[in-house]
Structure formats: structure tokens, C-alpha cells
Image 1 (cartoon, rainbow, N blue to C red):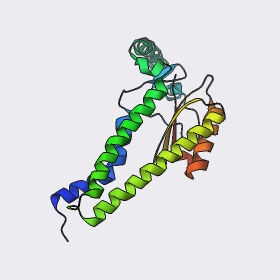
Image 2: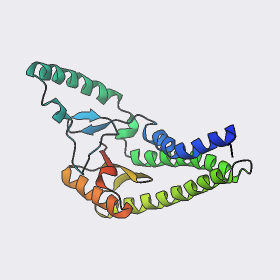
Image 3: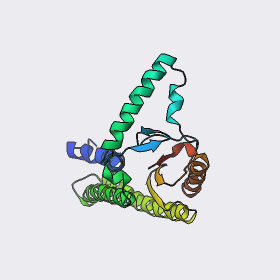
Length: 205
């Protein structure tokens, strides 16, 4: 059977809705975070629970380039300190992050529900939308469980986003280091039964 144009569009929405939802939440405010003495993007991966040091990428540069980089970084750091959103440095940052996540999910679920309940769509497409709705509900539950466990271990400021087989963790803790990254990664992998490579941890300061 040949799918109608609107059915193809609906199918695409079902497939992409999870990705779009995360991107809307994750990059809504282009939040900057610190890694050591440098600002990094929120999407910086810690890999196999290894803490990333932004200066490692500069080791192979020449001394001249290094000096230029230091000057540039000094200027950028000064500018970033002025431009970093107030939200990222305020005490209600994680509350706002959760609100952004919930709003994004709400919009995604609205589209999925409309697709699942629309009789004009192919039954397979409606089923996929229904399955995605259930998956979102399960992800929300897992996020809550991971956050609760992490908070019980001393990570009081934390926000987790789960989508399929990947997890993104935003956390703020004084003296955050490699050991903390390993602990959080262990919590996530245990709860989700996924590889550490699929866990992204970002320290927020």
C-alpha cells in the first residue's frame, strides 16, 4: 500500500520527535558550563566516565600557537563571564532546566497523541506513536529514579534526560572530578542497562 503524503510526514514526526524534544530542551538557552578553567559546550562528552580537560586538546600545538591560544582564551573567558546566562549561575538553574525539559516533552507528547488518535493515519503509524508515548513515560520514570539515587549519594543538584538508549546528566557539585563522573555513570548504566559510552555528563558551575 502506498502511504499518503500526510502519513509519511506523520511517520517522520514519530521518528524524529524524541530527537527534536531533546534538542529543544538541551540547547534552548545555549547554556555554558565550565570544564576546569575554560568554558565548554553543554554537549561535551566525558566518554568512558573520564573527566574531560579542555586544555588537553592544546598539547600538540606549538609554543607560539599556545601563547596565542592563552591570550584568546583569556579574552573569551572574560567575555563569557559577562555573557553566561544568569540562569546557569543561579540557584534555581536546575529547576529551570527541568521546566524546559517538561515543556519540550509536553509539546512532543501533544503531537504524538494527535497522531495516535487520528483515524486518518495508517494503523502502523498510530501504533508507533502510541509506542513512543509509552517509551516517554518510561523514560520519565527512569530519570526520576536516577536523580533520586544520585541525590541520596550527595549530588543534590542534578537533572537527567533519558531518550532510548542514551542518557544526559547535568550536575553541579563542588570539587566535581573523575571519581564523581565514574559514580554517576555507574548509577545511570545500572538503572538503564546501557553502555557507559552512551552516558553524557556535564558539570554546571
